[in-house]
Length: 71
Image (cartoon, rainbow, N blue to C red; front, side):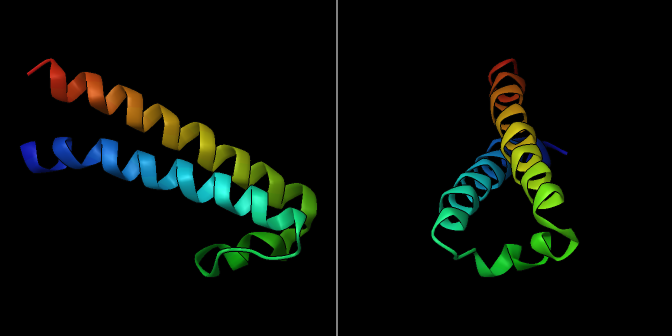
């Protein structure tokens, strides 16, 4: 179980960075290959998913850091 606790901040950072990169790249007409599927439901849903990635990733990163530090 400790292995999973140690990986939560890394996963959160990856999600947040992927969401930010996807947001920036979408302005110039590109997207990350991993996230090509998010625009299949339209631009509004795509932006909701991007924002959710950033928020959830940031929350996992910061709360995961606190979880690891509290041990």
